[in-house]
Amino acid sequence: MSYWLFKSDPETYGLPELESDKKTVWDGVSNNLALKHLRSAKKGDSVFIYHTGDEKAIVGIAEITKEAYPDPKQKDPRLVVVEIKFVKRLAKPVTLADVKSRKEFADFPLVRMPRLSVMPVTDVQWKALLK
Image 1 (cartoon, rainbow, N blue to C red):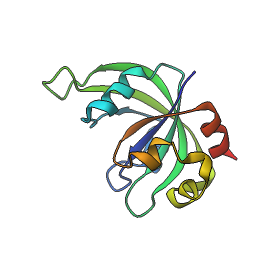
Image 2: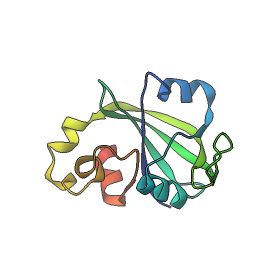
Image 3: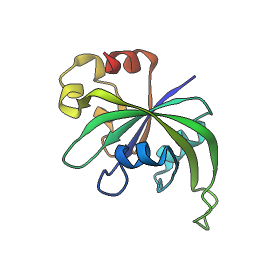
Image 4: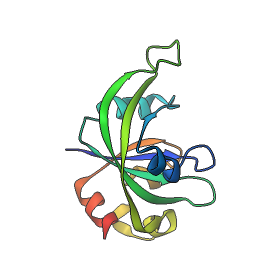
């Protein structure tokens, strides 16, 4: 199993909507590296949901329920989507400031490539972020 972080603008679609909907199609990704990561996500993988904007925090967990397929709303076959389901809210959000303050996250893509919307999370990073 792999771990991922998906960024979301909470004003557009955030964790509260995912919790209410129970599941969703994760779309709107256009960056080549983010698309590569999205294509690598497998059914059963766990996903941190990160709110951008004023929050800048990991707020919940989702699970991949359907692997990448072409976005039916787009004409470009390179643009893919995955389907995810809500798992849980984090008891305490993990802010970007918290992540940046810890040296073990220096190589975390959230710190190194802050504009990337889909990124891998290592086993060690996942466990540390859950603590």
